[in-house]
Figure 1: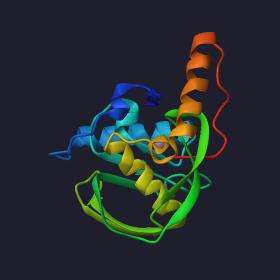
Figure 2 (figure 1 turned 45 degrees about the horizontal axis):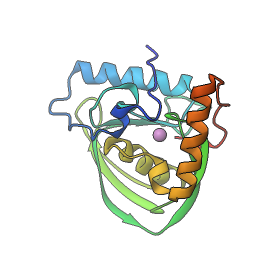
Figure 3 (figure 1 turned 90 degrees about the vertical axis):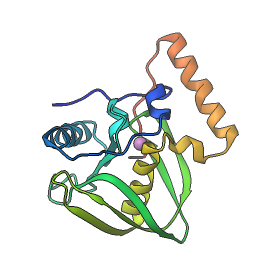
Length: 178
Ligand code: NI
């Protein structure tokens, strides 16, 4: 089932998500719905708070040519190693019509559980490392616009308010939508 994606400034996006205490059939169903929603959007990652569920769950798939082959499902993900620096042009399914360069760690190691409750350990670099950090930020109530200059953020917020006021839709995202 494709779920609605919340958009900034929805307060759920600003709320730190709770750890999942038991991985159940309900968790697996949510993960499935998140994946369908992510592919339909389309985006390469999605965090549960973006669909209004304040739980620490993320999904990612960088390979939309072969959906599902390289899918990552993470419950209670934690970054336990991060090194280097990389700058990437990021967008977000919850932040309409805006992309910006964001600085993050170049390589990360992340642990967590899949939707069966099995342990998952991932070492990533490049876009996957960026996407993992972006999604885990969502679980902490953080958006990529919190990691850019205040001036750029304010410009965006003003533009967004204007589009809401005038009822005119903002164009779709163009950059890498995470
Ligand atoms: Ni995002």
